[in-house]
Length: 447
Image (cartoon, rainbow, N blue to C red; front, side, top):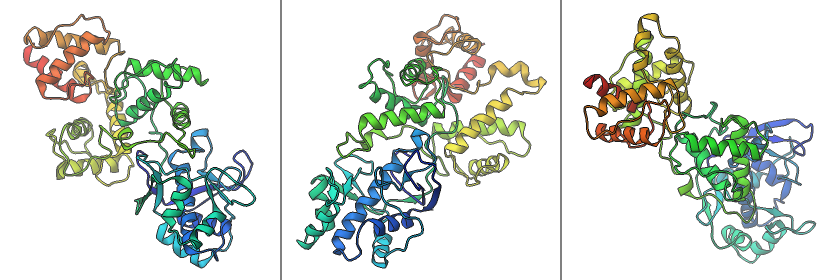
């Protein structure tokens, strides 16, 4: 999740992380009410109660946002062991005044400075145990002195803390995209691991740099992933599956110290997207065209789906086509292209491409191969692409010719960028469906 949200539910492990204890899944508000009722006294001044509840909310959200336990292979969000997390007593009674305060504050949390992640609000009781963070009993003294909840928090966590209020409440899903990321993959998930690995390499300089964090899984990305896997004892195949995804996230959070009181933290610029999170009715542009390209192709071979125009406008026809696709492939039928629908579109396209009816096989070389072609790619598809390019180059001096060697190097990339410039596409140098289509159209025009 690029920016924090409030989960509807949280899964609590009733014991130490490695213990053979059961998990309980409870509403997030019920969890905070339980923690507050287990750790602090309802007779405390209200401002002390509020300061503690802010800290308890932020602590839990930090665990969820960083996927602290899930990135380590556990199937829960937090434990009830006070050696690691917060007290939670399954089935306990909740104090009524604490319940009312939590209902008011449950979607507010603490951040620090320009960081966006929920702050790791370390705290202890202040009598039996002391720590670098907040003293729970100390909050009582400060509240009795007339301090506000915010001033109490500032006393322990610094003057640069912020209170984020009324954060959105949604279902929280795991960050792993559910599909392998490899050479030829593209999108915001690729950009996420590029950005995270580049930060990790400051602590592990044996990992090669990824020069462009552009969301295209190219040769430098594969080399960096492979070296990361070697360092952290994973299979060095250059492919980001679930184990590698979460190991990258775990190490990234560790070097950034996101789950520590004194943290480098994550800023908004580090999670800004270049690919849309969701695409829906009213949107326009190349991302819409890409969706329409997939839908039109799939609809051509599936009578239950309608073919649509590739015009870059997400209007009623595109929305209906998306809904029909979602219905056909067992997805939530909302007419919105989020991560799940996006990956299912790609899978469906690739599946049809690999099982074309015989009468269409002679045209297969003209069809987009189903994955992004970028530096590091090689083979017959690149050879065919280079032949297309040379036909275009022979008829258009703005496009340089290339050596037909089946290797996607810098010369081929430069020619692709020239064609993208000619076609009004983003000059990424990576060949996705729109660039492939533009190249094929020019090839057909000139041959």
